[in-house]
Length: 98
Image 1: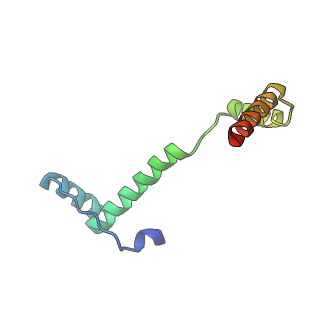
Image 2: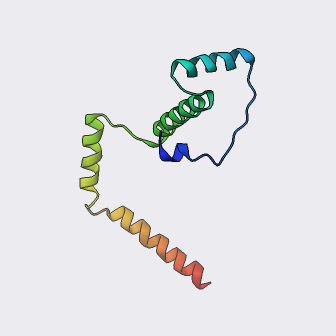
């Protein structure tokens, strides 16, 4: 188990039906773990999965190549973008002076 998981200075209380508790206890027993250890391990695994699904981006080969091509083109001049940035800076300078 991860060092972060073995440091136990926080607590969560929950209510559950007897049927669910029995099921969880059986699963913990089959896994050779205490009920608390089983719940902590299962919850941490699920949490890592959910976080990874939300925070990691997986690209196909085609999408990866398009991404790299876009990065290569980032250095090309963008006159319209540069003009918009100048207008914005000028507007901000006028607002700050007033």
